[in-house]
Image 1 (cartoon, rainbow, N blue to C red):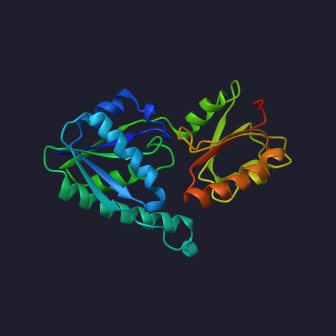
Image 2 (cartoon, rainbow, N blue to C red; image 1 turned 180 degrees about the vertical axis):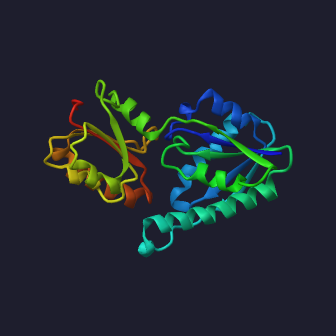
Amino acid sequence: MRHIHIIGIGAGNPDHLTMEAVSAIAASDVFLLFDKGEDKAQLTDLRRHLIERHKAGAPYRLVWGESPQWASRESGYGAVVDDLNARKRVLTAELIDSEVGPGQSGAILVWGDPTLYDSTLRIMRAVCHGRDDVDYSVIPGISSLQALAARHRIPLNAIGGAVTITPGRGLAALMSQRPETVAVMLDSRDAFREACGADYAIHYGAYVGMPQEPLFAGSLEALAGTIAAYRRDARARHGWIMDSYILSRQLTA
């Protein structure tokens, strides 16, 4: 039996790793790393740092796969995601079969928490379907939203209130319902502008837990332009951006 640990590693601060995650890293023989290109080398570097730190001199192997890229989105978002995950599934299965031997443990280190807006669990479920020679476990991590709320020193929810979590593309439809609190991830197009003029506060952060972390908090109406400009500059400077934000009618910035 091959066992794969799916390990949540938090939002960027190496000290956010849980004790369960530390133990899973220490118990793993092979680490599957997916190269997303030079622009995102910092993400890979953090994973390597965590492995080196918590293997503490014990032997291990790093195995690299080239992460599949997004195809054209002309066929629709859902179809593109299905195609991307299918190619990731093939690559993951090939790496496990060729690099993780019977009786060994492998590990995939997942940014944030594996259960929240990440495809790894769906891919592993598909990889393991119909097989009795490989299984997997999931170790939770601190999500970017938890880290963001902590850095701003705010509760994520109003007292007794609901929190809606959405990718940026779903925000416009939600705003017509005037939700109390919306947490937004994966916003590629400044969707927060959809809420301008609706008396919302925004708590924003990018690269949370990393050295280049910025935080913005205040009236969305006042900060929307500043945040949009920052996001453009950050993408140009770093080649990528990982950010999230909380919109609320209840929290005081």
